[in-house]
Length: 296
Image (cartoon, rainbow, N blue to C red; front, side, top):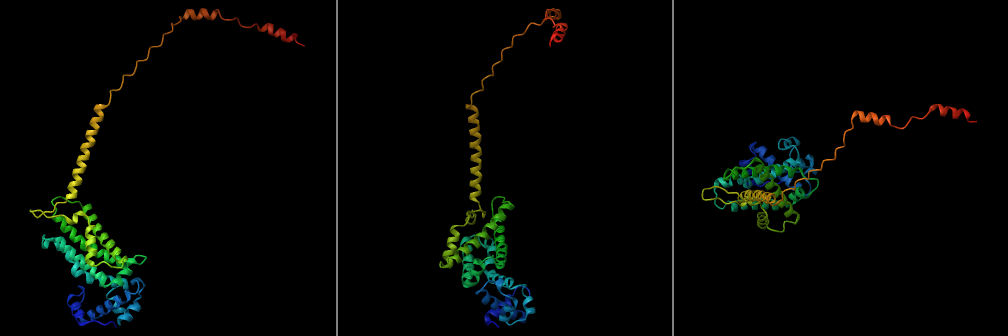
């Protein structure tokens, strides 16, 4: 059974998972966490069997299934349990104080990167192995929940109405950026310090994250205002251009009226009859018959 130090035991007992604080349940949970951390540093959590895990933890299969449905789910829950105390604070960052909120945001992310470095072997399998790990899906879901609280709080301080589409995009943008930055850092062997990695992350962050509070305690999204002004100016330019083209265009020349065709004099009915009576004589059929009879 994996060794468990007493401070960790007391911390787990007092904090718990919000499920069960029974001492035996806490001991089993700690044993499973210790075992899954050791095994997941050597291979993907999806490749760890329940039998392998319970043997390393020294617990029964029944005890394991009271904590998770699979080793991958247990690993995800264990990692999130370690991340939560610091990262979940991002959801109340602005309501606590407007002063230097980006420095406190930075501190929260530095702690996240430090946690990843502490479990570097585990996160290498989670972020770099193919196919994508189930654990990464659980971590993304947690980040989406925590970042969602931050974005919704941010919008509450905005001086303009923000659409649901903007909120959804901002949340997904932040979650995917976090995953992308961690992946890049891990791929490069985590040679840069967590502080340097987060500083680089912040240099690439979208402008809304650096929005400043005004004296009235409201946030102004400068890029949104700049975009509106740009579109308004473009509409004015298009309208002016259309007016200029209309004023400069020459009037179309009038189409010539075609000359009337000369009218032919109408022939009277009597003239038509006279012309018919003066026509060529019809051939004599009798002469033609006689000629045929004389032929040999």
